[in-house]
Image (tube, rainbow, N blue to C red; front, side, top):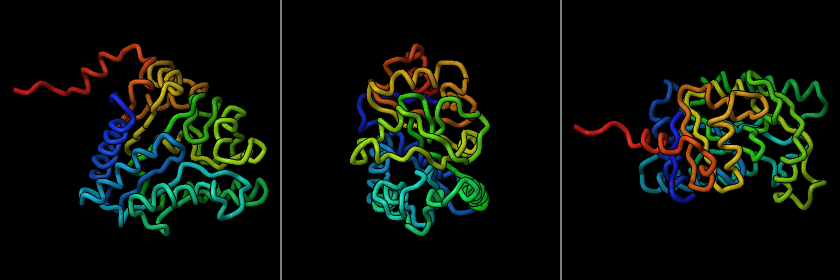
Length: 262
């Protein structure tokens, strides 16, 4: 695991974008596949990727985008449905073609149909050849995607109940708490771990406890993001506030400096 701490959110986003681009440069033989997270944490990263496109350093014209999750029960086209969010915040920013955006079908009615939608999403990821780089945020309770505390560390894409804390945190995107869906379709932790590179972005002191628990705490279902410790190529990009709880900060900074020249 590589821990990169930057002085502010803007530099954090730039370093995360560098980690994404270098990971995509090692893509498998098919078209690149970029895993996409929603929420506030990755927004700076997507804008940084957009600047790289504008500067001619990146091109997402042949890239497939794969969403981490989707709410259950929102009507198609709802502005806070994650397909619409990603169309606004990613496709329109980095030049990812809307027809290349894959999102779980949370509009399916009934548990059997939702289970079928989850299985179909797993199959689609496999059909694409797997995710080359997965962008991630982290919830204040340590959730990854919508894998809430208690999620199986080997879980696959499935229906999950959102925790009360997650719903309160996401209420700012809706007109009120009552409008926040109670369930979602989310990639499982086992699904996420199959991506070739994971790039997690976290900024602000509200994420400091979760970051410290995920990086330096035990591997546990109580902190779903602790599965990052299991992955062979994880890059964690933090600002100073999000890194405030790390005990081994000096070591991370020394490691990030690389080998001495000469």
